[in-house]
Amino acid sequence: MELGFIGLGRMGSEICAHLIRAGHEVTAYDVREEATLEAGNKGARAGRSPADVASRSEVIFTSLPHPNISREVILGEEGILAGARDGALLAETSTVSPSLIKELAPKVRAQGAELMDAAVSGGVQGARAGTLTLMVGGGEAGFEKLKPLLAHFGKNIFHCGASGMGMLFKVVNNMLSHVNLAALTEAMALGVAAGADPNLLCDVIAVSSGRSRQVEDRLRKHILPGEFTPGMTTDLATKDSDLCLELARELRVPTFIASATHHVYEMAIQKGYGAEEYASLIKLWEEWLDIEVRSPGAGRGS
Image 1 (cartoon, helix red, strand yellow):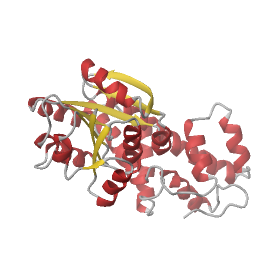
Image 2 (cartoon, rainbow, N blue to C red):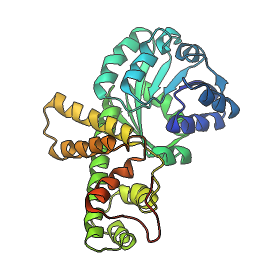
Image 3 (cartoon, rainbow, N blue to C red):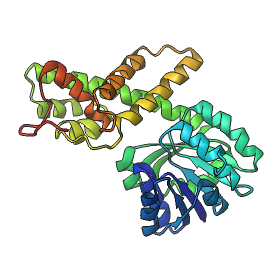
Image 4 (cartoon, rainbow, N blue to C red):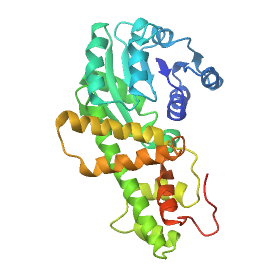
């Protein structure tokens, strides 16, 4: 199948590589020429613009860092709709708001194409391993066409409902994930400040009622070794948290815990951790308490 891929960052480049290895003809594009060239080295054809990619593709995937970029890539002068084939399918894997999908879907439909929100969860590691969870919104026929392609890089694939529902599920999931990490960093800081061995405390939490996926994904892999190369940056995590609070405001749903957690992420950005792995939240408590939550012998991460 002729596929397009726009946005070749940490997640996008891994997903695109799976589609290439599966034998599809992929036309790839990124504003960073070096990323497009790297995709070319893996077997993709180089696209000149989103419109050019769309003109060569039956299905176009996007993996972009911000909702405003998604809107421009789809609707802009050189955007996807400027070159989309009749009957094309757009699969938005970026994390954007459900309301943006609902805004864009009719505009895409008016041009003879269909927009599916195909939100992903599992991070760069899951993208590399091909084990992502996919939360898809849109029509049943579009989902059935998209599902075999998603299976190249996803393990758990859910059709969540109409346009925007995939992003709704993703935003709610991210809300809980981000709260879990902030709570975990606070709890670890309390334990270490009171004299607990961080490795042992981690091992106990991992098999007890306080466990969450963040124990393995962030505590073991980033916090204890002091390794804050992203992963997912604090900037992007905070953007996702903004989407959660935006949805809550639209629906007038109280989100006391998520709102408090959001301020922690904002503090981390103010301290200069925006481009770091978002597990760098721990460094706030380390500074406040003059401690280190690290494996014995490990130095403070940068």
